[in-house]
Length: 60
Image (cartoon, rainbow, N blue to C red; front, side, top):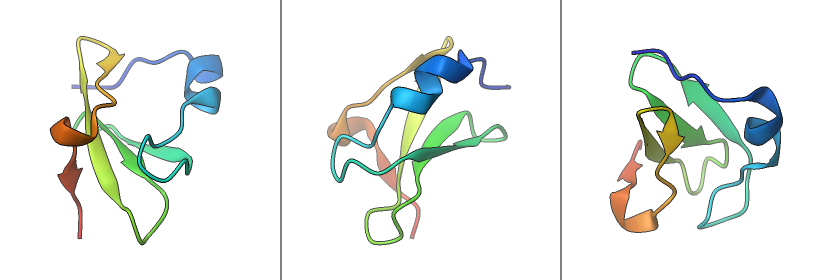
């Protein structure tokens, strides 16, 4: 399922844990933190990013 987020919204969203920018993983419907030390992936459900650290999964 493709992630359908407004580009303006995506440009201001940051990882709640480390404050780094996100990249979009269309295949997994996730926002992935670009900080290699953090690297958490946050789910996007019904085009709404769930930016709760407890909901994130580690990618490394």
